[in-house]
Length: 188
Image 1 (cartoon, one colour):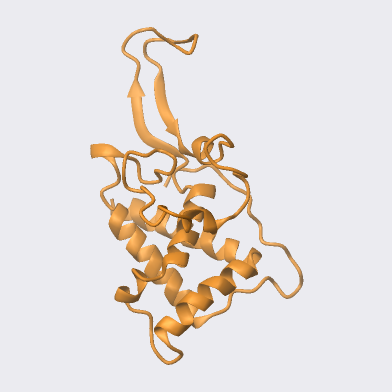
Image 2: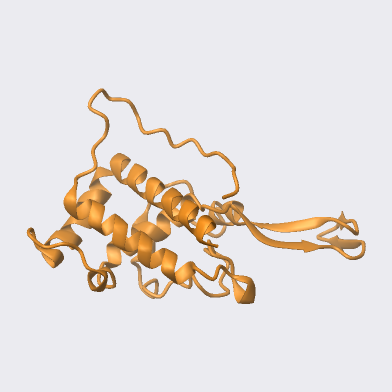
């Protein structure tokens, strides 16, 4: 569990920083929230993180656009032939939840390819059900088989990203080389 959690936390932090390098306006908004709260000569503390609502929205948006586990491991095996939506799912077929497809579905997410943390700042999104059965955004799975490290993961990512952003401004490469956002499907 520790190895899987370490790898996925690092991947999420990398995606967040990459997105913030590209979206300097979003990074500026995080600094507007973070810098006055923590102060110039203080370090970020874990207790600061619960008040960083915009940063939490940025993290959720990165989890939506770049889920570290795009195919959730809720694999189920069809024990008999079944038709779903007119399509045959033969016995012995393994079915998995494609979280990437859900989080990029235009019927669920308006402009699904756009990076918009504000969608998590709208009314009633403060408690966006990232840990519940609402599968619009379930990077940690759902139900009794969800990731046991989900709370630790979110707290760790929030703390480290807040700390990195409090100490540094993340800028594009000085030679103009764009940030590579190519996705590679791997399992941690």
